[in-house]
Length: 138
Image (cartoon, rainbow, N blue to C red; front, side):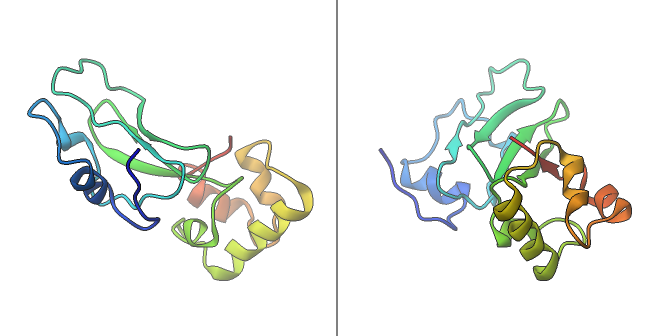
């Protein structure tokens, strides 16, 4: 099993593994994505027909990279397990609100729905609307 360090990027993991095969389709992978413990990486093949909504990176928490039908990658932050740093990547979420999210989660348990984040002091409708497409709960 290959070991990478938290903070390494996908490109580092690919290099550690010895590179990709000629069938790899790196155009659908965000090579700059920062890895964290528990990530599993799947590099799509040029032979893959339907990549719509297929996870190419998955983990039990934190960010997931999802490949949409147009091949564009984006990250979602699992607010149930995200770190302070991961929460701060969300639109309009700074250190103070990120800390409040973690504090709320520690006191009250996991969020059941994305909307539950509005129970956190400082996260109202406007802030929620700015991040709702960037977050997930699992």
